[in-house]
Image (cartoon, rainbow, N blue to C red):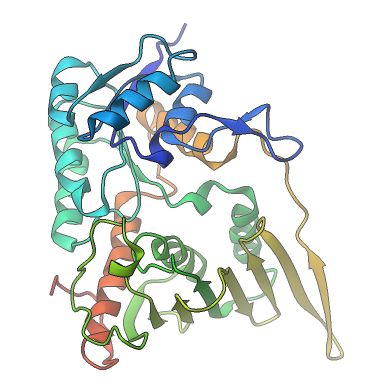
Amino acid sequence: MTVRLRAAIVGLSGIAARLPEPAQGPGMGIRLPVSHAAAYDCVQETELVAGCDLRPERAADFKREWSTLLPDLRVYPDHHAMLVAEDLDIVSVVTSDDAHAQVVVDAVEAGVKGILCEKPIATTLADADRMIAATEGAGIPMLVNHTRRWMSPWLQVSELIRQGTIGDVQRIMTSQGGPRAMLFRTGTHICDSILWFANARPIAVHALPEPGLETYGPRYAGDGGHNPRTDPALSVLIEFENGVRAFWNLCKTMPQVFDIDIYGEKGCIRGRAFPGDEISVTVDIGNQRLVTEPLARVQHTHGWFAGCVAELVQLIRGGGRPSSGAREARLSLEVMLAALQSQANGGERIALPIADA
């Protein structure tokens, strides 16, 4: 019998600690894991043994809410105490965006076998590089939770692009609206998707701020993802070495949307994340005729969180290339930081690679 991998969580916010929720559709199992804790409980190869948070009330709530399912679950006041007391295989890092790096380095030094880190990977390139140096130096896989990498509709989109269904990609248009149109905390999802679907190295970034944010930048000045007002919205143009251009529109004063349109030589793919990943494919069939069909929904069992944890188990035990690894996540961070540098200089074209401002 295979020994289960022992997992623990640093930072017990909702996305770290929520109990499983009832499934919302067919083929999704009885319980849907919507948190790190629920994913470890769902994936048979892992067992959740501990968690920690600097706020004692969060740790107490975590232990109480999971007491029926995991009566032996232990909690700690900080990650240092937990890493000393527990023999851990996997650590989830669910702290503030700007506090990931040291936890990852400490977990590596404690001898863990794999790390699942929340997005964005960090808020400075120096921190991202520390994390990469630590994990790669120890030969430890790290996944960054860019969720669409494990969502079946978006995996279908990637496969359609790879198959050439719409021809070579030419342009990508994205929109993200509402008060939580935040460049780092939520925008990292769209940035990662743009880089994924463009399938080329970004070479330059241009960006303009929303009115009133002209003095923000050229570096991250948020509070780690808690207050949306400290994480700006920008209008961003990204150039890629293969000629693709991506237009990324974040706006806090328009409705909550999360849309991505991918235009190729022979058609386009349109995706709407709300209310439920609605995707359509339009292809040119000749004689100036376009045919649009909705993307057929592929049934899945446990959702993206369990898929992410299951992949980490595979990487630990069998190796392989991660779907959303540290270097991919660093590239998204570099684009976001380049956008801040551009908007702080009146929309100046910022060539990549860059250094921290």
